[in-house]
Image 1 (cartoon, rainbow, N blue to C red):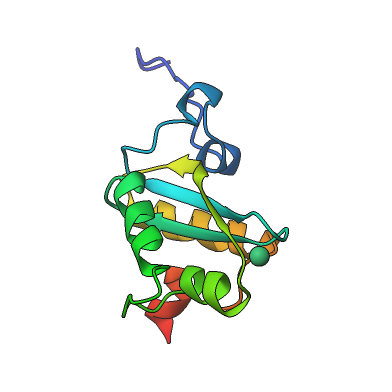
Image 2: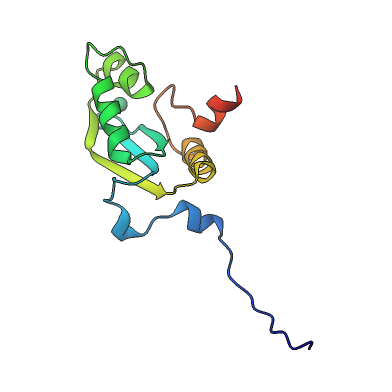
Length: 128
Ligand SMILES: [Zn+2]
C-alpha cells in the first residue's frame, strides 16, 4: 500500500539494559555499573561511573586507607566494621556511556541487593 514497506525493529528492553554479555564481565576499563563485595559478610557496594570502572575502584581502594580523608560507604564498611573489601573481584553489572542508563541500573541493583550502609543511588543523591 502506498509503495511503502512497514518494518518492525526490536526496541531496547529493560533486560538488555540490565544484563551484560558474559564475555564483557571482566572488562573494567569502560564506563558502567559495578559491584564491590565484602569478604566478611554478604553485603556489597553498588556504584556507577562515567569513567573506567577500574579508575573508580582504585579511588574506593585508596579511600579505605586509614589516613584517607575521603569519606565513602566502602571506607565506612571496611573501617567501622573491620571487614575486608574484595577489590580483586569487582564485577561489572552493566556497561553504558549514558548517565541516565547508569543511574537507573545502579538504583535498580541497590534496591535489590543487600548493600553497605550509606550506599545510596547517585540518582537519590542528585534529588535530595
Ligand atoms: Zn562486610
